Length: 182
Ligand SMILES: CC(C)(COP(=O)(O)OP(=O)(O)OC[C@H]1O[C@@H](n2cnc3c(N)ncnc32)[C@H](O)[C@@H]1OP(=O)(O)O)[C@@H](O)C(=O)NCCC(=O)NCCS
Image (cartoon, rainbow, N blue to C red):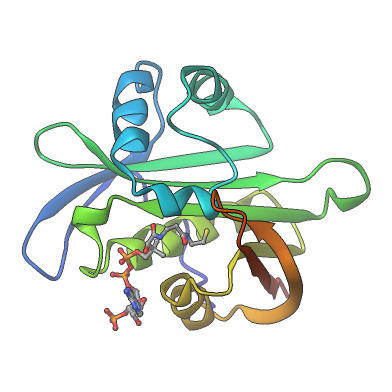
């Protein structure tokens, strides 16, 4: 498990030589986030809790940029487009010692290490929220996401059978990976 502190803002060079700037979400990111959401493959909405195609959802996320219990980061390409989004959010009430993580990368920017860079950074932010446990859930078919978080020290903690249905109505298992902070 990474123990590095949060680094944002920083520049990263990906395995294919492309560069991104990684920073906290900012006021004025709305249109860039909506464009990012609109370009994601339809299947990705199986994995996402927040529908970034929706201006209302995006406005809620951007408005929460200074919320104490929420950290959100984006990767920005040289042309200014957002190409990845990640968040860590402390849960309310009886699970306030737990944070959940979301991570999503533009299809054209995958397999270059960006998901791993974003995951390491957002987990560092999650730890700074002061929680005892960090978890991420995803459909079982999402092997890339599982590979990323397993490398960061997360362990499989649960499998919910047929917990998610896609747009065609086909059921999918949901896996939960978690890390308990020492
Ligand atoms: C999961 C996701 C974030 C990965 O982003 P990425 O930028 O491609 O990730 P990386 O390039 O850092 O890949 C990390 C590792 O995942 C594995 N991986 C990546 N893509 C894979 C694929 N298509 N098939 C199998 N393994 C894959 C590899 O082990 C890879 O490491 P390696 O390239 O060193 O072998 C991206 O696919 C995505 O946004 N998916 C939809 C949303 C989602 O499922 N989020 C995860 C749960 S919150």
